[in-house]
Image 1 (cartoon, helix red, strand yellow):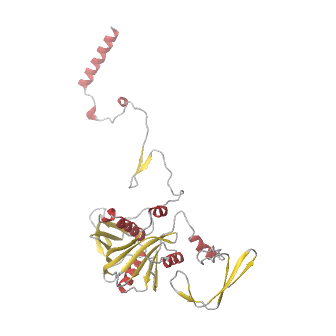
Image 2: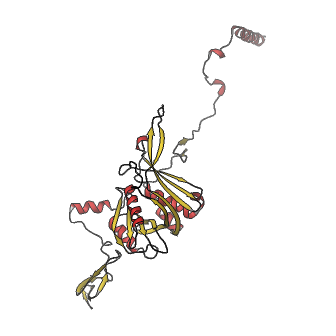
Image 3: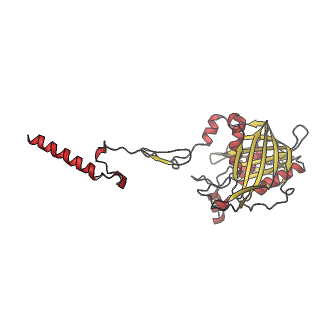
Length: 350
């Protein structure tokens, strides 16, 4: 190893022999007799460097990954562990079929443990521009294991480990499937989703994972399948149904549910939740997207707008009401009123 000073900056030249790890990808690269040149105190990672595009295609690619006020649709990466069995592999394939085209399926095995070392997940997240992940593995201590989580600024925000106790694949249920890219209808049942903190965060994570693109309106024919999550007796039951619109004799159709698959019975295992401060920071909304406060106007949870109007005091005796035949005065009443008015005039004259 030799160090020289060139133009005020320290230049370090060293020789590496033997095997060296290629970084957070989990693979290994063999480097023999290679001369590596590094300027400054530390050599930056290839993915952390400030890249200047040389072509228009590269410029468009970098613009897509720039921070935006309205972020892109969240993509999910589905990663298979080094010892994943056939059940876990099929679960990842079925979830990928539901997530298409907003998902990336890694077919090769990756030897990593998310709860012990998260560098591999962060590397893949930055490489594939995915903020959601699902990792499948299998071992004697934790058989048929799934880890579902999400990223914030290419770092793991929170993740939850689930065990598969029962699984029915998409292929095993012989029914028609929904088309690719369909937005699902999410239904959550069970008090645990609102009471327990782990289940509350799991519900938020599942909504983030399966919600798909954000839309302003949904037509009735666009509701094609339902994802139903039930929390009962310490388990989470995941079911998928296809919506069938039948004739009902009126304008609103009759809806029937037909099981489509996949079907999973899950049990909660380990959790890695973000702190309250970090979770609040990840949910922060930019000032440009915050709605401006309008005076005397408010909205409820369903989006209904309410307005408050300030008016001067009104004389209700002069209020013009609706004229009805039943409210008209009869001739006898008209005569008594005229007599009363005449008597008042006579008294005044006296």
